[in-house]
Length: 393
Ligand SMILES: Cc1ncc(COP(=O)(O)O)c(C=O)c1O
Image (cartoon, rainbow, N blue to C red; front, top):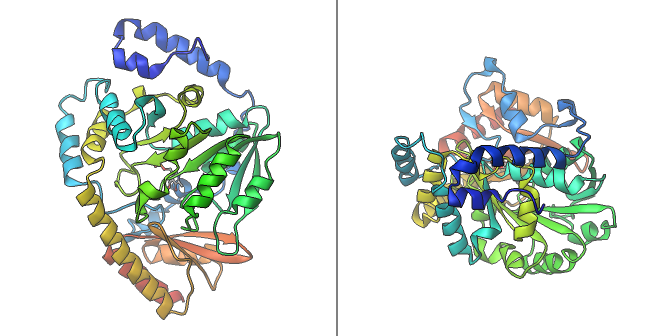
C-alpha cells in the first residue's frame, strides 16, 4: 500500500500535471491487487434488484407501480434538482472541489474526519471492493440468510466462500450464530441493518457490543442503506464504533431516503488505513459525477424534505399493511421502505401475474415459504398494488 496513490490527497491538491503518470501507476497498483481468479459467469449471480429491473420484459410496458427496487419516489428534493441543473454549466470540469465539500459536510455532521470517508457512485462499488479485498486467499464472508447478497455473491465470483447464517425466528440477523461461525478463515462479517429483504432492525446495544467484541477478531461491515428510515438513525448507527477506533466499516447511500438511486452516490466510513486498502479496488472519487455531487451537497441533511418523504412513506406503508390484513395475509413489521410477507402461491408465478398487471415486486423463498417483497411507493402505486393483489389473493 505504501507506494499506492492516495487519490483523495491527489484530488485535494488538484495535481493535474502529475495526473497522467499517477493514473498509470494507480492502474498498475489495482491490477496487481486484483485477485487472480475471477470465476466470471453471470449465471452464478441470482436475482438481485438490478437483475429484476433489467429483466422487466418490454411487453409489459412501463410499470404502473415500480415496487421492486426499494427506491424512494419522493426524492430527489427540489433543492437537489436545482443544484444539479446549476451544475450542468460547469459540467466540463472534473469534480475536484466538490468532493471535499461533501465529505466535509458528512464529517462535520458525524463527528469524524474526511479521512474516514470514501465516496463512490452508489454504495455498490464499495461493497464490491470489500468483497474482493476480504475474500482474497479464499476467505469466508459471513452473512445472514436471507440478507442483501451483492457483497457475498461478488466475493464468490473471486476466491471467497459464502457462509450463510439463518435468521432468528423473528426474521432478524442472528448475531450470536454469526459470531459462532468466525474462524481463522473468516475475512469479513457482513451485517445489513436494517436487513434487506426482511426489513428488520437489530437491537442497537446488542449490535454495539457485537462490533466491539467481533472487530477485535475480524472486520465487521455494517450496511446502513436503510438507516434513514429509522426513527432515530443517529442512535442506531455504528459510526460510533469507527470513532472508537474499531475495525468496523459502515456503508451509507443516497439511493434510498435521499431518492438518488439513479444519480448514484454512496460512501463508506471506516479507519483510514482500511479505506486506503479498499480504494485499490475502486475507480475512486475521481469517477464521480459533478452534477450528482452538486445535488448531494444541496440535499445532505435537508431535514424538512427528508421528514416529509418519510411521512409519505409511512402513510403508504400503513395503507399496505391494511390491504394485507384485509386480504388475510401476515407480514413482517417493517423498519424500512419495503415490506416482506408470505405468499399463498408460487412466488415466481405471483411476480409474473403482478407484472402483467403493471405492478413490479420481488419474490424470495426461505423457511420453506414463498415470500413477496413490496417496496413502498406513492399512494397511487400502492393502490395499483392493492387492485392487482386482490385479483390474485
Ligand atoms: C442493503 C443494500 N445495500 C446497498 C445497496 C446498493 O445501493 P446503491 O449502490 O444504490 O448505493 C442496496 C440497494 O438496494 C441495498 O438494499
